[in-house]
Image: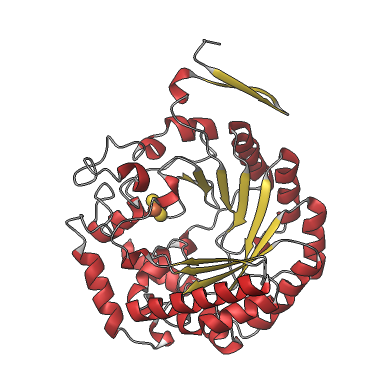
Length: 395
Ligand code: FES
């Protein structure tokens, strides 16, 4: 062990970090996208458009091996997501393995397929946290967006059951032009269900949401009204001593500076797709970069050595205006996936930034939002048939 190397110990023994690895911190967050199967069809899903062409899934043992390696490297948070992770029959086994390794575990679910028995099994396996997503605050809009008439009642019932089991519960509402005007009703529902945290996250335009951007992006007026409502509820909740944490995320399409996506490329976050591709963010699969598979390489090699994870680390890859920008240590040039989707080159500055020569694309999207249709049926829903059509049209 050289003097400049570091070592730490966990339950599996010592883990050594070589000098070359010292500059790169290990991942903190592992997102396990267990499957692309899902009973719902939300038009803002962040899964890849061609998900139907990706049917393979890692086995239980292969996932557990990924968890072990991530934990050995120092990751502490593990999110089970998808698709709908509840479609995996081995979910209790995966939760137990992750918990035994010492992860803080979070199930990110639509609630469809959840039962009281499963909630009890997950609790027994050691699950720490459950996040349930709703499409809207009323059954009709919820059904129109999710494609399931029964989804709303089911979600309500399961949200109550999650609380009864004593879980800290996050309710997540993805906001867009079709539901953002009912934000007061969404908040009323969340408070009635006694959510510990409420995430009101305006659509991030990746995957299916990008395909449907024109029909989903709220107008500036809608955002401003929603902000007023949230501020009013915050004041009232504080006055009444309500402990629910309220997070309202506005779309970066109305910002002048980009978000520091993922806390930086290959900095804290590692995502693994159902068939085992390791990615620095959930959307990177679309980039013209070959990302490594956990079936072929160790997670340690992938994180520290692979081309894909090193491609946008640091700032030496940055062109102007990012390279000389004093804010580059805060926003890292913005989102690589967004730069790719909007300009065709992932190394460009994120067009959200008003200094970007491509910022006009964002201004045009805002303009389109002002006159876009409010007809939900014009959206392209995330289902196998649409995915197969899209896949065929691209090969
Ligand atoms: Fe991929 Fe932002 S979502 S870098």
